[in-house]
Image (cartoon, rainbow, N blue to C red; front, side, top):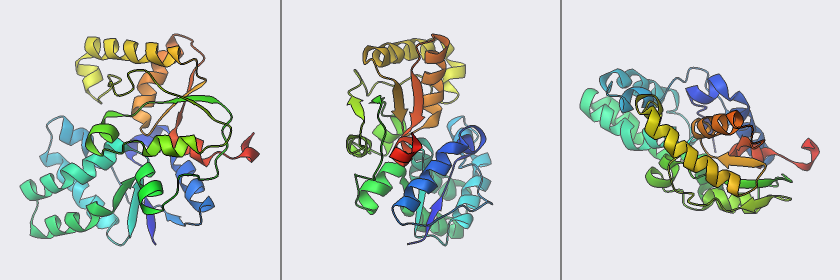
Length: 245
């Protein structure tokens, strides 16, 4: 099976260690992962803020770059949701018949990391070791758009040494929402305050999620409060082994 990594522009710019963790994890499970260097943004920022025609070149680029792969994995429920739910919309509205066909061929092969591991590769115990008290925040796109359900939690529960704690009111949004946090700062900060309060109630060392965008938002708030609680992407926990101590 030919697997390609779509790192996302956000991770590539700010959290490259997450992409490396995905490759390391899948290699440990016996899979080679390609990284097409000509990949670009999925167009989500443009699409969500009303610049939908401007997202067309990115939809076209994605379909071209990943056409030859059996599976595309991304460590982002947000971007996976954009590709699976909205690339077809853009192609049909602003593209042509060839682009629509290309998108319809590629998009069904796109998986968020936990989906790939549980549904495609059929594993929950990936041989990880992470001896820390951890809670999991289900991000909005993964929860409501992709409907990944308990897949991330099943993977985390199988991690050796972990002390996994349930997050109160876990399904509530953290308030990030991309440009929402900029355009509606007061509302965003109120939502963030609620989320941070619940995270602190768990007494954890680490907050994890499947999207670094949400972790950046929550982690920034926790850092400003000097809570001592760190953030770690799901991929990085799953890629950790006893030898990493």
